[in-house]
Every structure is written in structure tokens, then in C-alpha cells.
Amino acid sequence: MDKKYICIYETIKNDILNGNYKLGEKLPSENELCKIHNTSRGTVRRALDLLSEEGFVNSVHGKGAFVLDNNQITFSFGNIISFAEVSSMTGNNFVTSVPIFGEILIDAALHKKTCLAEGKEAYKLYRVRSLNNESIILDINYFLKDTVLNLTREIAKKSIYKYIEEDLKIKIGFAKRIIKIEAANSIDKKNLNMKSYDFVVAVKNFVYLNDGTQFEYTESRHRPDRFEFSDFARRR
Image (cartoon, rainbow, N blue to C red):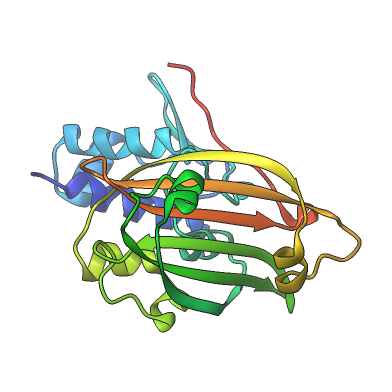
């Protein structure tokens, strides 16, 4: 399968994120992009369509593709994206610690909470995200052991998704998410710098492989003053 459009998409996206293309600037024409990347117009259009779907550009018929303001997108809920990727895109220098890393059996109660298959073994870990010496996000992760083989604390400090896709060669498919406001519990207060806040924004993620098998449940608990929901929607 021709994946050249993905390379073109990544190149243009990185140029936008690095400031090589400014807000409102017109990208090179389709013909120019064809020459730059030595490819067909159909391939270029697929790359531009993907950039458009993800909110990086807006294509105007007869005029071209123009760069949209993407600096405000901190957590993308329309796509599956790792925390490491978010940090890279936004330029925030987050530090990740892993105070808890262990193994657990998915029993009936945990199945009800996570929807992971009962009777399966899973890794359970806490990952604390700190910015400017303040702990502001707590990720409570469950990953099935028979999918995410040989996971380690060191991998968890970096990027588990990168490990899954690049080392294990496993394709992550899709996710379902629930966003709720919840009272801060003792775990939040122990791991986060809560200041005077007594509630958190909880983002619950049920993540599946391409074949529809759920392999992850993650609950991200955010201090409310440092949580920003931002997404890009296009009318079809």
C-alpha cells in the first residue's frame, strides 16, 4: 500500500509546528507539492485531506490550502495521540515519573470499571506528569500483558505508544472517551499538587487494537486549572 502521502503529511505538519509555515500562510500549490515530493496529485491530495481533517490547514476551492491556528490544541480528543506527542507538539517540557508499576489480575470489579477482559493479567501503573516542578496530571494505566509484552518502568517514563507501534509492531485502532468532573480523592491529593482545588477533570480512555480488541484502560486525572479541552470539528 502506498504510504507516501503519510510522509508528505508528516513533512508539512512538522513544517507548520516548527513555524516554517505561519498562521494564515498559503501552502505551495498541489502542482508545486507534486514537484517537491516527486509524486502524483492524488497522493498530494490525500496528504492535504489528512492535514485538513486534523485541523492544520483549510482548503479553499480554487485558492489553495491555508495554515490554521493550531497552537491552542493541547489535548486532541478527535485522534489517538500519546502524551509524548502532545508535549512535543505544544513545546511543553513535561517530566514523567512512575511511582507505581506492577501487575494485576482483571477481576469482576476491575472488569466493570475498565471493560478489560475478566481473568486477564495486566500491568497497572501510575504516571505523574509534572510541568515547572508542579505535578498536574495523574495517569492511571492498565495494559493487558499479552498485548503489551515486556513493558518496563523505563518504557513507561518515555512513550508506551511508541513502544507498542515501533518495537512491538502493533497497530492501535481506536478509542472511546468519557470526560467527567469528579471530587478529588486521596490518590489525587497524594500524587498531584492540588492547591486549593477539591475536584479533578477525569478523562477515561478505552483503547482498542485494529481488530477491535481492547488492550488498555487509562484514566487521566487533571488538576482543573491546567486542563484545556480543545478540538477541531469540520462539517461534512
